Image (tube, rainbow, N blue to C red; front, side, top):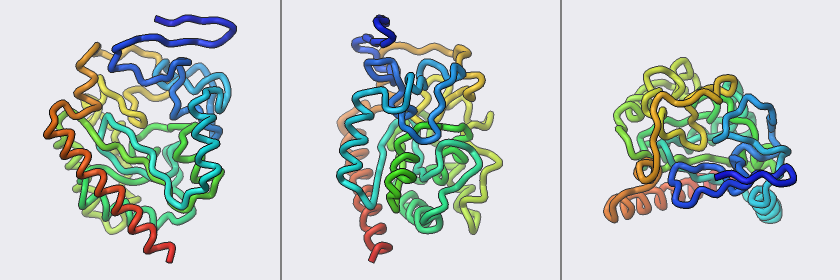
Length: 254
């Protein structure tokens, strides 16, 4: 149910495991002032808001991270498995600062903990993702190391593993961009369960309705471990990945 008052949209869908926007109907990972785009081509699930930092959640996190001034920033999501670095705002650019160092860390941590796609977020997923915290922290705060980790996917992992194997075969993993996660080969994986970075349709086609429709608890298993054993394994694995990431960053900053 949506309620509109004084130009503010309030989204109230209690118990809706498929909901990815905040109470204001805004995708918080499109609401940052970094190549922010507020046009009507974005669908409801990727609504960037009426202005950058229009939402109290992004305002609060901006204040916290600005005060802290981190040397390492990790933004954690679920809905697929992937390990990304800037840039997310388009599909062409790779981070300029610490490019080789960040790619090296991703490659090593990925091999130990994920065996999933890695690289520049926009290039890898095959969609422009303007207005993300990943890009804002990297650019505006000049944070040396900024990463986005997608840590859980409740579907078939074989295609993701194949993508990782293809990248590992290249001497320079950043060069493999011809087939990304927007390719038809991966489309069915995300038709129902787009993550914070993966979306089924491009921005210019975002308002189309998915060919499949899911509701209720089906989304829970796509974004969250469904058993205690799966939950504990996910927590243990990715806690190790976070610590490995920080350790490798520390070595490079010495």
